[in-house]
Length: 209
Image (cartoon, rainbow, N blue to C red):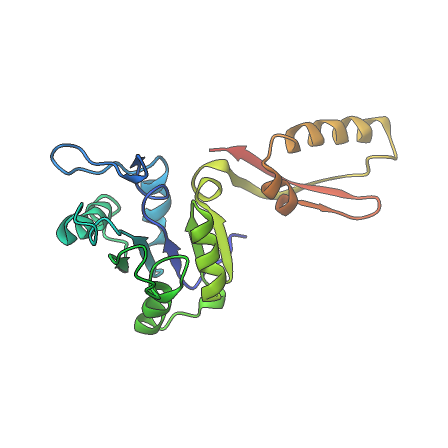
């Protein structure tokens, strides 16, 4: 059964939007590009608080206007049916030492106070170690890498495949097939998706999205 989170905290560039030279990729008309899977995964979150937290130091450096930075998130929100509840942008200089620039958790704390969010039951999704550290410092209960959240695997059945691998030839063949499938999963997913005891192996039936 899919876990229910109190809120979703998403990073912006590299998680929701495509990057170009480590900055949000924009066309000449200012249009951004949603990364694959973003729309399909955000639309079903309607009804649950969805937040975006992003560092945009280019504003302080004079390379980006505040309106353009806010427009990045506005464009996403239009594309995903207005499911984004709120957002915070740190526009300070990277050396300013502000408490809101990730990995510092200031933006998360501000949103949590404003919307009364239980951070221990929330999830953060990002693509850098700064995102991961921010989640840890904020006390967010779960951190997921963007690639895992949007692209790696999805559960297509809650049924479990059970077998006794050492009791019969058929069991040994099933074990080999299961481990062959299992070996394609990234290490983090393998650790999470497996369950075993002395004589019983259990694998969720999964498929690549």
